[in-house]
Length: 104
Image 1 (spheres, rainbow, N blue to C red):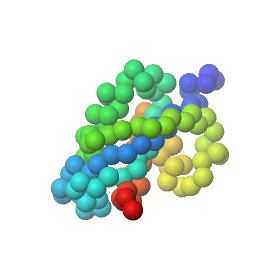
Image 2: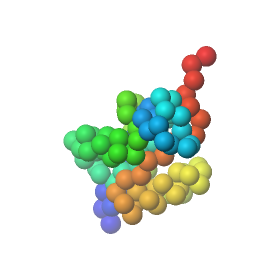
Image 3: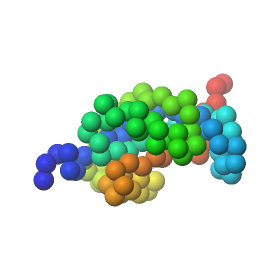
Image 4: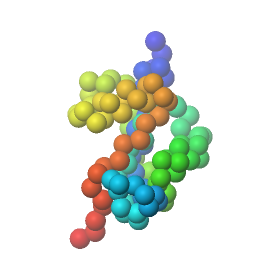
């Protein structure tokens, strides 16, 4: 198998809830996000990936870090593991931290 078949790219960043009828997140709150994708050309396709996130009810999207993950065993929690599996099946998966970002 070549590297691209095994690698998931994790783009970490922030987004603002843009959906008023979301029972889990409050409209306007910013949350940490992680976008897992199998697209090794994610830099060239960033607009498409941002549209995927926007269609899930988020805007003001910014990414600050990218990590390559080739081994699911290196992931530390069940949420990331299930998102890794979803990304492998669907090409991409979004993880949102439940707690909003607050400034102290």
